[in-house]
Length: 434
Image 1 (cartoon, rainbow, N blue to C red):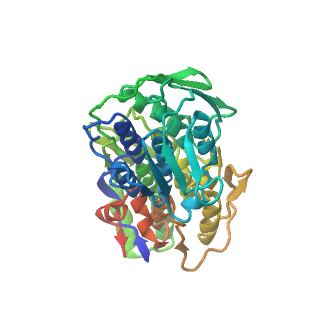
Image 2: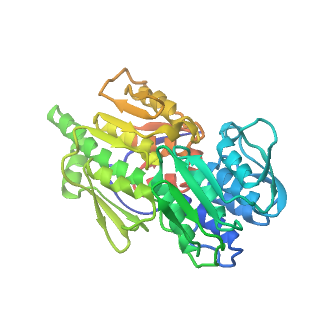
Image 3: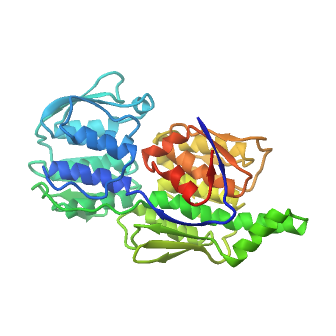
């Protein structure tokens, strides 16, 4: 299946964003470890959270988490301390995503985990037991989900957990998000030095909890506002050369009714590391006004001529910013992207491949850097963006229609992983999705 996405004449919308997947999945694990009766409110309706809910509901003997990497990692740790024997598996791509680092750490604590097929990869055969270990070391540059998975079970270990992180620590905001949520559910957990986290024993309490909206989902609307400014410049240039009456009408409408997007359910003081995206987008000319309902986005100021950014703490926004900067003709160098190769797809390769279809030649260095110096190539006559079973590929490329006649997205249903209503919300904002 393919969608063809076309832009509205002007950009005005009020959008109820989905609840945060990152918070929802952590809250569900903590709720289950607390043996709670008060289910967290405003849970995400995305695939990953539905998979997590189903897996935790009665703990079936065979758990298929499909493409949900977060669920695979969090549940591997959770099942290790939960009585019973289970097999956990996923899609073919999930069975290619490494999990040895987490399994080795859990085994060091006393977990009983076996590989069903290939060493180092799912499916896993897990027999829950009481883990006697209390202190482990882990490289700080691994996925923060490994670290979060270990931290969350730390509070139910008889002696708690001391986790030492070695080397560079990436995605620190996601670790801090996990620690904050653990404290919300009654645990004692915090950094005791710059590279050591201590979790006290004692478990969790049954706590009322409401999930905030998702800043990762918000990034695509920020992207639309950023690219919208470039669309207006394109229309202005065409007008000087004799634009059509329709284009002139659109340009005039935008002058009298400037683009504005309201995103509901976002907090100024968010637990989510991806909230830093608002600050980065400010350098691309997008202004954020916080209200008692969420945020309002408008265009303000002149976008930066170049963007150099360490994205080690916001890797899930990499696709958004790479695509945005190309469309805005802003050269960039983004570092700290070492986790992108083990996401839903190899996102570094996917971005290089798909942006070439649009005429942009971006490069990678050291499997952790993406950069673009303005180099162009002939674009495809009718580009179709492959999504690689990756929700963020679909959502990051759809807004390109604001600067192009339209864009075609292959396998658009992948957005259900984190933002099931994405295409419906685009239509509410006036986009054509066919």
